[in-house]
Image (cartoon, rainbow, N blue to C red; front, side, top):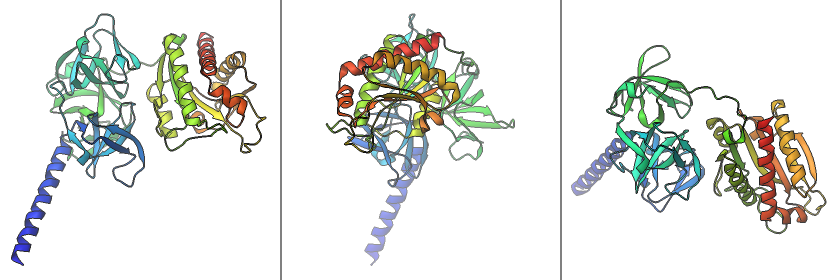
Length: 427
């Protein structure tokens, strides 16, 4: 009996110690590295929550919160989710982790989706721009760019110093990334919450203490916010975005409809809507980027993205236009006579945009044009930015399905959308 008691005591002590170590590690994690081959990202801190995406071994994720031994992390596409702490490890990939860097290249610097010259370009930084470096590996620096993780070549930036040592004059203000971000009464996760800040709110930096910025709350009290949940800026408040008059100055968010466990419609020949929308969106992206536009995709692979998160991508990137790509279907699949393309909008302000894009599609596509119409769809109804939803053919029509599977048809769509947007911005 005594031996059993001793064994139980030892096991209890070990479990408590492990819990303390996990808690300590979580409280000091700025970034984590995935240890398992594949780790599910969930919508909340627990196994009962839905799987929203996956990350793979050696991926580096920035931690923006923690709860119940789960990390809330920011993903490469700018979305956030929760991963189990026991499937990842704390990492400081280099001394540059959470450091300020200045762009040193004279001709600007491409910001890429992944650490590769073959990866999609998300935008460009100008000479002397300041960025927050999360980590460095294999000649690439992971940075915070427009509220998401991105990559730049380490050869063209100069690390100034750690944010833990920076003078406040070098960090004039910070911008909150996520809604409900805690502003605490001391620079520690155990500090009491003085107020909660929402995405886009800015604070002037009063000082730096360790991994925390000292700020003034809305009522004038001294508060602290963690440096891994904010973006830094070197020029005070973000200036208001002026109206775009050229496609080359525009930010376009493309939304390939459906994805993941939401396949959408399916044609008689096996075409699945979620795959067709992604191929079409990528074709449109290629044409728009060739014209100089900045293009952001709500998804780049077969994954589920909520309607709310699709709209959040548009808001976060201050999209000049949001376009959701879909293919229609009728309930009676035997009726293959229904065919054509339709442009939907919801808000009166977007009617001109819808008519302009629809006219270009009507001129370019060898398919009947069903016109620009009001459509009560969430992604256009609840969108803060100018928004359209395009139904570019019927999967219930075998003739349309053949077109939808054709690369030439996708290119026609891409040319028409690009021309329509160019006309819209010019006028």
